[in-house]
Length: 253
Ligand SMILES: Nc1ncnc2c1ncn2[C@@H]1O[C@H](COP(=O)(O)OP(=O)(O)OP(=O)(O)O)[C@@H](O)[C@H]1O
Ligand SMILES: [Mg+2]
Image (cartoon, rainbow, N blue to C red):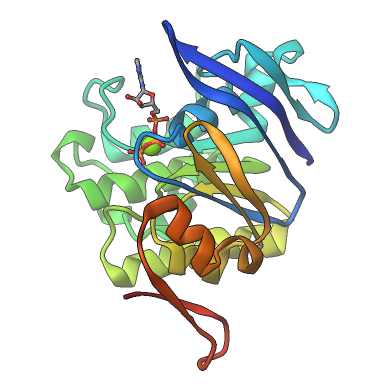
């Protein structure tokens, strides 16, 4: 499914956070959103999936305005893996958290298919043995795996991931990214992910946008966006792009 965000503006009270942001995400694509802390990345994702309502601009899925769609239909299409803690959850078990991914499909009672998809998702993130543990007792990396499992169980067509690997150890960073990229490549799902690790963005993302001060300052193919000049301008950090080992690697100097 085609996701398009056009000219999105959003303010928290009087402070304008997003100043006319847009991007497009096609099926089978991975888009990286890069930018400094506080630049509006999380706010943008929340405007996309209707947690927040933009004051201007629109978000469409296959040309349909998301605001005209039922919340339940939007929830079937877009899977969201939030950035940090989960204050909205009381103290469900790991299994229950992943099962929440089935809510847009289930009636009050979950069925066998919902349960099977939940177990499969737990297996994909290697958390099956924690199924009956209270979610709050997990380490932050384990929580992140469970939240990714929830989005997998949801069978979403568009995944929105806010720093999905920030709390994961390096082995698991790779495994989770492989699961996500595998889905994109085999099932024509699309993924939009906020990443601080620019080398990971270089490795996994087809396209990238840089969000700085609530606006897009660069967009296009990842290699064209993550140049030494753009990174210097955005973060004030000097990097080298090393092309000696296959794909370009970003090395912070
Ligand atoms: N609920 C809120 N009320 C008021 N201001 C907020 C709220 N949430 C975020 N902001 C402000 O909006 C701006 C953008 O925040 P946002 O979380 O979108 O940034 P971000 O790019 O995701 O940053 P990070 O890389 O640190 O996650 C920040 O200045 C932040 O302080
Ligand atoms: Mg954020």
